[in-house]
Length: 300
Image 1 (cartoon, rainbow, N blue to C red):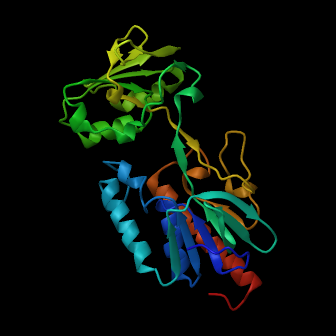
Image 2: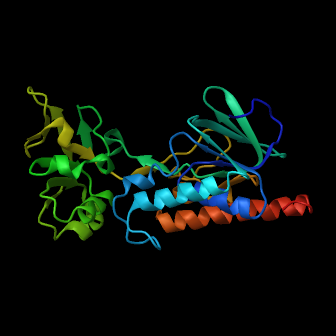
Image 3: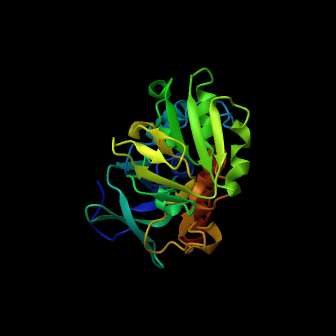
């Protein structure tokens, strides 16, 4: 699967199998680069969590786009080795290339790397307005609208997946109580008119486990554990090692080692959209291609 040697078998190692990483793989193949794509789950896993999209050319669901993206990567299998199931644990760059460390202890090496590891859901303990004595609830994107029909659910935070859930299920009889801090009021504007949502602007909320095993949310009632979700935004999923992080934890492209190219949502908190991620992945691969041509005129 991955090599244990520090030789340089690939022109490009791509970490992350979302829209940015897959676009990098397809673009790299089109210009003759040999690449490896590292992804701990399936290609497009995060895309499949988006039930409705309205800003992606040619697609209206994340699942359909994920299927197309995965098919395109399979199409370039002659130029791209897809390494699934072994999570990347660290990345180290030097003058000759980049080494990506994989669990359980193997490495894969390339002349350049595109890091498109994206973001993860923020946890309750990372939200200053929440104190919680319960286990971390699942993210809202894992909610099953059919199972929530006719039940009151607690959604902690008003981030964008809330609007996505409502657009994807316009006729579902949902009843969502959504506490959020005043600073996030702008995020709630797109759902404010939906009668299925009750927005609560709060400075603080305390969560506790009730004697019956339910989640007690201050004075707003109790909720079954399977009807509580976090929707607090995201945090960058940066790898340890050579990646340079800004003060907010994101990894801007212009602050990285010359052989490390960041793409997709990992770059910054702004512009986190499927289309911009796709373009940035392709652009990163093209950057590596031109850099390799400067050092090896016969490449590509």
